[in-house]
Amino acid sequence: MSQETRAKSLGHSTQMNEGTYKKRANTKTTIDLLTHSTKEAIPLGSAIGVLKQLGSDGKSIKLLAAIYGITPDEVMELLAE
Image 1: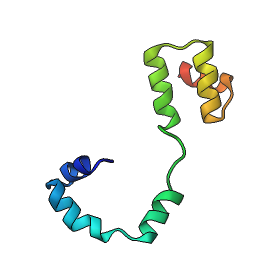
Image 2 (image 1 turned 120 degrees about the vertical axis):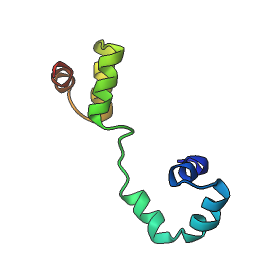
Image 3 (image 1 turned 135 degrees about the vertical axis):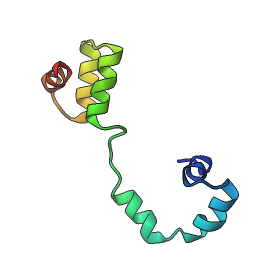
């Protein structure tokens, strides 16, 4: 997340955000962020929704299946829901 976005979401300026929160960063927080983050760019359900909007073909179904580690048949079932 950019500093500008973070500051705006918290309701302050970038300078206030940097002065207040940046100095609070610590090693534990950094490690927690790295070890507890998801490896998926977006949740599978969201990816299925995008595929429904864009239209699907054999290639896109196989690609989505490979990215999420599921079978093309499972992708087809999710598309049918």
